[in-house]
Image 1 (cartoon, helix red, strand yellow):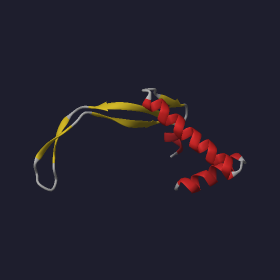
Image 2 (cartoon, one colour):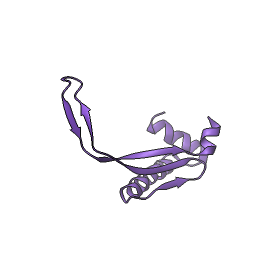
Image 3 (cartoon, rainbow, N blue to C red):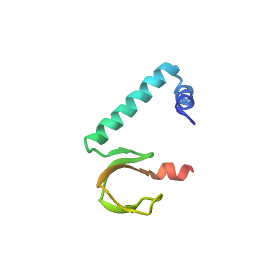
Length: 89
């Protein structure tokens, strides 16, 4: 399902226009991005949790040359599905 199909499905499910569903989608995505950028954890009960996790610096290998390289520490977004979502699958 791509973004357009998702917005159409949300509009149909909620009984609103595609324009309104699109605005809600954009607002939700921006709110999640801002919260994660500020280090906040987002808990959507029944759906799951989003949070930023730190990754440690580590060694890796260049697959083309086999050369050992240093991969710097960083951050990644983690999502853990909630019980209701898991049970629905």
